[in-house]
Length: 247
Length: 368
Image (tube, rainbow over all chains, first blue to last red; front, side):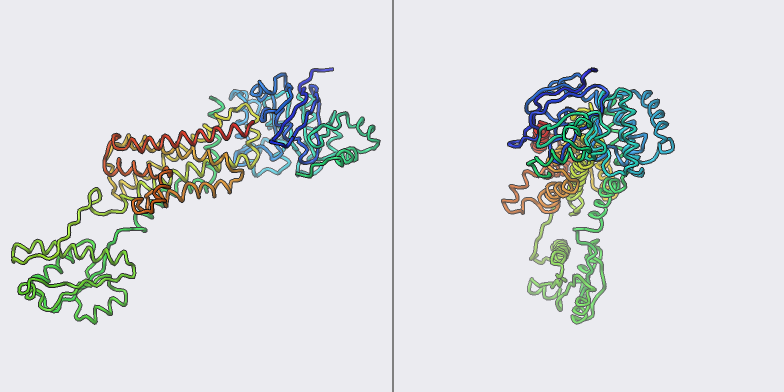
């Protein structure tokens, strides 16, 4: 067993009377691809924001990348990457300007940024797009670039919030290849998704219903337990119990 | 520090790449100044005047000559009859007619009084009444000059003395107003929109999950707008001085300091707005209603505060531009020093601190 990079217990977030996240407990191991599933409004985004140090938990405790999520959230931020579902680059900046901005924000030196930018563009086959304004790139390319920028500073964990929304299956496959590459380099991947075929690509998945984690295991084990051969069906059986509507 | 520079750099690029933003930033001050300076002129000039003088004598020709020489009047000629006067007036060719009675000089000498009729086209009442006032003033002055020579007791005496604005130039009034307006627009609307845009596009989440501190980010965001509004302030100042001929009588240093204070106030308000709305459109509408309209209506830029109903006068107290415009008028036009404007300055400082406090409190609450 390798080191646990995320370990939380009884993590809870309340907004007034509403309990968005209700005592969730789980671990994620180093280098793992961890799928974080749930219907809209199940509390995925809120849970993820607590892990990223953006939002303070109401109760519970935990560590991310070895740092306490309550006391050391600024340290956590240095060691994680984050890609939001709304696509997280600046459309009116050029490709290299986006890379440089985030490199700068994560405290990389100009020299490092220059060297790594070349390598990144080379790897993505993006050399010719170096000076292209991001808004002119096709969506699939933007997402690849956003992911590369999110792991540019070599974080221990990268959080992906529905990274493949709105792109075609071929592009999604390519995107998942990049996720595998990152995991091979030892970066832990924490990913939320709506696509059940993508859940199959994960080492383990957790399924959130009404703020709680109702199931957590490998996709194969979950299928076995729910006596079905598709993750879709597993998800449907669990989601049926949900009392909260689609938010 | 490196984060800060990277972020300021990014903000400048956003601004310089957006043509609409650039247009607002540099177009508004220039257009406003020129518009108010030339097109929307509240002075009455070029009054087209004609004379009807059935029996010319030394006095009537003297008065006619004075009117012809006045820069405010555009002399259209002598009319041959009252009918001509009426026709020209009806055709809109005249703004004012000066009608002398028969035997003007004789009746003045014999009976000691006489009257000159001033006919004005008052379809624009303001222009109409100002034209007659100007004409009355010209006649009164002439009368006074003649008084000693021919010993007639003078009937009308008007004394007009416009201090600080002897030429009654309206540019003296609105230049400080435009400064207040433009900086409010740029700092409040632009800053709130640029922050809300990050929320709307999802980049804010990425920034929040990064090691960039919130304070650093907000400070870095305001820097470009601070620089730009200061440039705008200087553009307005130069245009008013060289194009409109508005003097700078007071301390330039004091003026700059007040401008910086007002910029910080407007930026703080922009930040406050950004904590209250989630969509760019709402940010624009909200800032326009709460920042721009009060500047136009309640700051004294266009409508004098003293003439407002008491309720509106009371409301104008919380409009920052009111105090800023007051200080600029006092310092720039009247040439007063800090001892005469410290109250207004304190007001501005107080408002800035209040808005910053609200912003910090609201932001903290959001993160909890």
